[in-house]
Image (cartoon, rainbow, N blue to C red; front, side, top):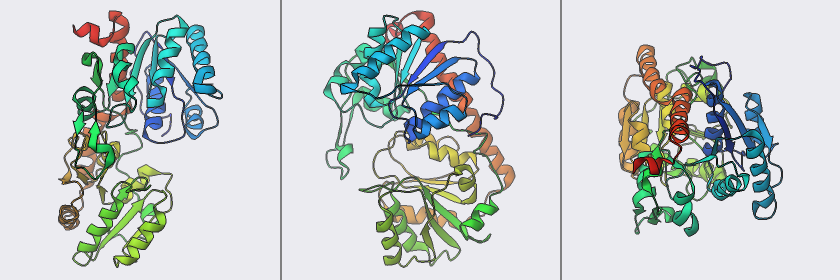
Amino acid sequence: MTSSGGSFALVEPGLSILQLNTMLSGGGTDDQCVKLAWALRRLGQDVLLFGPDGRPYATMSRSLGVPLENSGAEGPIKIPYIFRAAKLIRARGIQILHAHHGRDIWPAILAAILSARTPKIVLTRHLAKSPRSWLSRRFVLHRCDALVAVSEFVAKVLKHGSYEPESPEPERRARPPLRGDHCKIQVIYGGIDTESFRPLNARSQREEWQAREEDYLFAVVGGYDLPRGKGQREFLQAAARIHRQLPQARFLLVGRGNMKEMLASEIARLGLTGKAWLTPYCNNMPMAMNAIDCLVHPQVGTEAFGLVICEAFACGKPVIASELDGIPEAFSATRFGTLVQPESVEALAAAMLEWGRKEKPSLEFRNSLHQKVKEQFSLEAFATRNLALYRALIDHGASIGKQGR
């Protein structure tokens, strides 16, 4: 992402906002936190990021012009971190304190209390499950002013819970709800950099992957860590079923993780050598997304939303994805593709066979898909939705829940 993208409409007057993040090491939560801070500044807001320096997303923050206040070492049970955050809230007259990680919930709440400034506390839940600790599930809604869920599915889990006791995935078996005022739970979808994720000529990336123009590239994009990654093994099993029927098909695993050797062995065992491979880590994901012909997202664990689906759509690519958790909400951005039953190799193979036989979309059609995604999921739209929530809290002088009563 570059800071020289399209112009944003300035919103005046600006609020004083602190984005609190104890990680900044990578992953979707850190990515959304930093991009939100950047986009809010583009809307004319006074935004500061409080987190540890020297980490990947701290570097990214500075490159985007987002001021970073180094939080330093956390210290025993984060007490030094909390006191430094409280001091910063007082010194900067922070009006909105927004935290994103589960581990940041109580540091944010305690820092707000100690600051004696009573900033409005906003928390975002980026995961498709409620907080792990009973204490948080019991009291967090009593202490925050708003809790953002990144999808309707996440909001449902937070309000009502989700129980699948027979699921092979331990984290799906019991996802208890939060107690308290559920009116404070607000759904705000995340955002992507639609200035970068757009239809592009990616011939050079295809050549780097040694893919011919006539090849049809299916790809799973994302990390592949044990125990099951994002369904990469199921993807390869589906590829083994159809590769002889689609001689032009190639099957890429774009990402990195500790399943690398296992997946390489699986490729050989399934007779996919020369047809499927793990790509080197790609730093230019917009170009990678344009180089493929179809994104396959066969998630088998949990998925709060699935912004990678929106990134593919923004580049004009079809998507085959598991009908799981919040994924259908991301898929509804354009519905260009197919949703399949989670963990069904047969359904996945059938969908891949269908799309591998279709003509590739025209540039005109791809541009129309991009426009649809931009309207809903651009970083400007993302920041505007969060800013509207902040304004509601400030203007009414009450939490969202109290407004609703």
